[in-house]
Length: 370
Picture 1 (tube, rainbow, N blue to C red):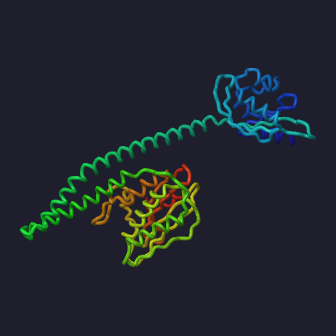
Picture 2 (tube, rainbow, N blue to C red):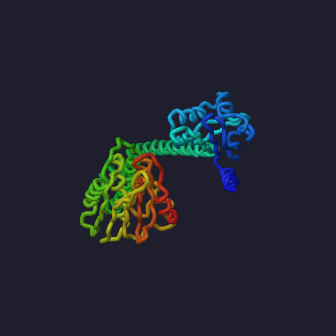
Picture 3 (cartoon, rainbow, N blue to C red):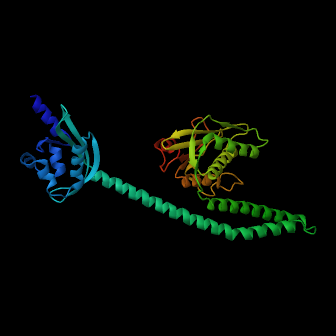
């Protein structure tokens, strides 16, 4: 009865089982193994391991694994090997093989295997899709950079000329008040265009430089020092959470991204509020958080906050958060915007320390708001 139960369990396993005796005879196989290897059960009963697998010499990697286990008396040797079935079917097998001893002598070889052909195909398909997506994104980014640089170059000179001439005309004593007022409007509009051209040029000129390991607290404090100069005279306080860790970044670009994110928080946070700068550990890196105490993002604006030139400020250029996301992408990271649980806006800048994608945790935190 006990042997019958054991046999039923072995037969129901989805993993193929092969047991080879010290003399090379095959003493145990199950249904999954017969299906994976493409041999009928009878062939195992009348043939030894060497007769079935060594003679055809078409599954060298598979055979070598068994030989390595025997030669090295290895336990739990795991490999993924190609396999050619008798009917010509090609497969990829995940094989675990062990040398079993009893009383210091070889008692047998136990082999467990799974057919991972379809799983490997899906992984390769996913890899190809990611590579294609990366290629398209790189081409799109390159095209946008070229377009932005061209526009900035073509617009800069006329805008400077308009601004300069309008200012010179305004300074002439013979110009009456009505004309001067119109020239003032022209001059202010030219200045705004100049700001946009500078922002576009800065965005287009972003290029990842040499990366190095930098302490989070180091770049946090440097960014806060810069912002305290910008916010001089305003009743705002910057709070840096205690955090110990490093990111692998281009320090200049990382500082630029933090500055842009803090400026956004400063613009939309309340007077007298607190802007918090912290970080949360992520698999492979860190998610830097910038949180303000303002009213947060409007739901209808969230899909567009990282778009170039999108702004809800009357005098804004709308390149700050676009700059943050661009710098994150240069580091193979990501930028996310959502509303904090306590109110206010939350910007998360994910900077991986290695080449990895956006973590599940970051995606889940901002999925509802996005």
